Amino acid sequence: MTEPPKDTLVRFLESRFACAQACTECARASALRVSFLDPGPLAPPLQGGPARRPAAMDTAREGQRHDLRRSLLLCVEVCDATCRLLSEETHRDEYGLRLQVEWCRAVALECAHACDGVPDAADCAEQCRACARACTDFLVVLG
Image 1 (cartoon, one colour):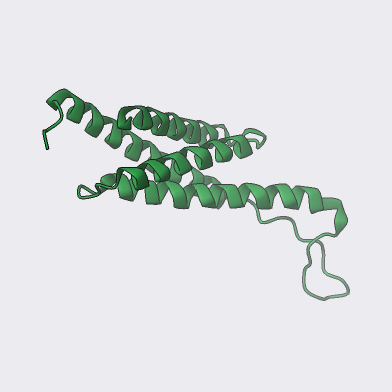
Image 2 (cartoon, helix red, strand yellow):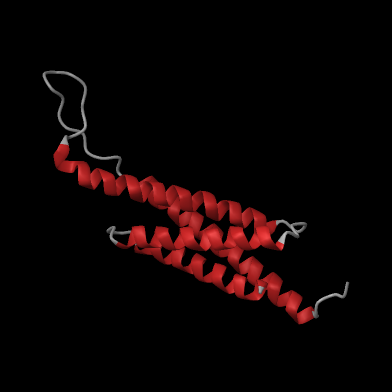
């Protein structure tokens, strides 16, 4: 088996590192965004009872918040797993690596779209898009 040209190997390693770094930044931004999500307003207690969630009037907003939270948490998990995989020096399964990076790209784009409609989430959306671009660039180098 012949060694690949040195410049090809360097480009591969640089792209792999850039992708891992972008995944880490995306995971951090998504985790930070999750920590800022308000779990939702509580309605005043009924006759001295415990506080309760409001009924149907806020269900649409609750659903959107839940979907955003789910998307952000998935993004954190997938980006973190991808970064760990890219950081392993001994990982030689190109097919598995490609699948993980493609999944990460898809999840990061989904998360960016989920953040688009949320006030004060532009930074998170941009980090997710940067992660998706880095994944795309790495897949090109991976060939």
